[in-house]
Image (tube, rainbow, N blue to C red; front, side, top):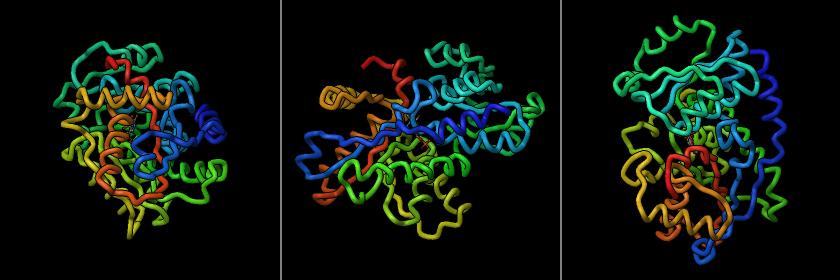
Length: 311
Ligand SMILES: Cc1ncc(COP(=O)(O)O)c(C=O)c1O
């Protein structure tokens, strides 16, 4: 993958990882300060936490001499979208294994336009993704492609996200902050959270708002990464933010997103960032954080997926 290094150097020079004060009336009322890390602004296509989750997978692909990447996701997948865009921009092959039966969504149209080869696995076929031997037939079909787990997850995905801590530390002075008390972010696979927990090594807690219900196994996936890294005392906490299921939206959530966007001028989407912020509001109002607490909220991007919803 000769072009990976281009992606890597672009990602390394991302100076526009901007950290901004985030003013909302319910935070002010509770005396909580939040700075928002605008990963949505990194790039128009390879946006959000995807840059960071992909970097080490691309490194591994290059080390193994692969010519491209094969990965998995749904018909609105932000991960596949970023991967396909990276493949097109930097000139490596991409194959996407999709959940369910063929359907047209704005995301799927983009994947095709970016040159990603698609295979639809049905629902049962997709559920088998964690079984031993799942990748074998695909590796026979695409022997030159490197497999990347769903959502760019696993230890390599987490390692890429570790650098987020250094990115915010560079910018704290600019906010007038000498320190912070924790992170708040949406979790889909838990990979980004795991990377932050490893980077923090107990210095600050990481709070994860689960965009998926319990049975998606996020807690177990995070635990596996902690064990692999031999972290003895990881500091994180998970909160259910799924509101009845992944991608389920309700009027209260949509109203909250609309109000927040009007008040802040920052766009959110309902699957991850909107749910994460609403879960933070609920915790703040329940008294989870003491007055004066300073939190970093990560805007993990995903705005392309918003095209599937009417806001
Ligand atoms: C926009 C957005 N935010 C958050 C996440 C969750 O990230 P992670 O899978 O690292 O928990 C994802 C993907 O899963 C996402 O697409």
